[in-house]
Image (cartoon, rainbow, N blue to C red; front, side):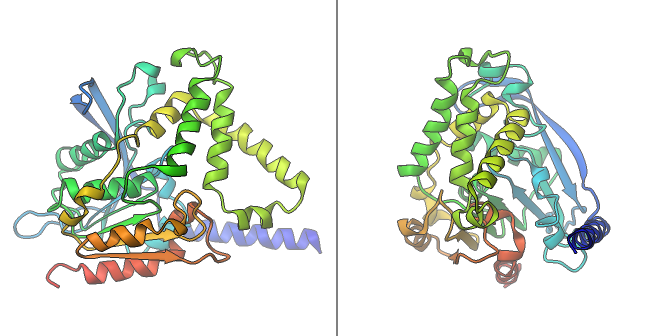
Length: 359
């Protein structure tokens, strides 16, 4: 029976992947170069490259304003391409779905320091400018306005770091956005355990004897420790216990995880990405936000645990804000629930309806 079950499962997987490919084809990709980009700390780059992926085409009203652009922002260490998968694009971007690519112009950028955009591992290593979240959002804005000629967003949404970027967008460009959906973050200064685990990730890299001030010839040993911390904080205890219920299974998964991530992660890139959150704090200006906000966290998110009560407190400052705490279910995956659109898409639907221009 096992071979037959495996065959059936494989066939179902192939059918699912094939259906996803038919429903949502590969996005268009491009690069936008910003010349003489000035970072907030005074550093600069003669050329800052931002890579991006897009679905659909922009639509303009009689005044020339783009009416259908959707900006989706990724998390720390991620890329815009992480949304090009069945659990996200397959749930949202297909025909008749909430963000149907035939109706919306969907923009998936690689933020500074990530993916195919300019980053330390391109060659500058630890001499790369020390960017922060404000720099990243300003570069995204330039990509839209100067690169893609998008002068307005129907929706900005983001996961984890992208969630925090969403709050910065709302405060920095209040008239640029019709609505926002931040997923898996908090709109306050990063402190407590959240700050501590980020510091430990950065210290694990910087204090590694073979880091060599960022000019290493192979990935420093401290990167493995940093990835271990990231794994524990970003995981769901319930799902990890269900998927790896024995000691040997847990050990095997951990070994494979570290082996795979060490081969695909650069220590400087990871260090810079976590350091970028150092001065994030949108809380003083939450009352200035004009757009409707649907703010969603998951109860099994260890990075933003619900018992803090911060989300419920801060959302009261947002005039048109609503906070949703997703309960722990068999479908949630801790912090990573942010990319499982089937779990929270009903709230995106509400946001789109409530923020329809003219309402």
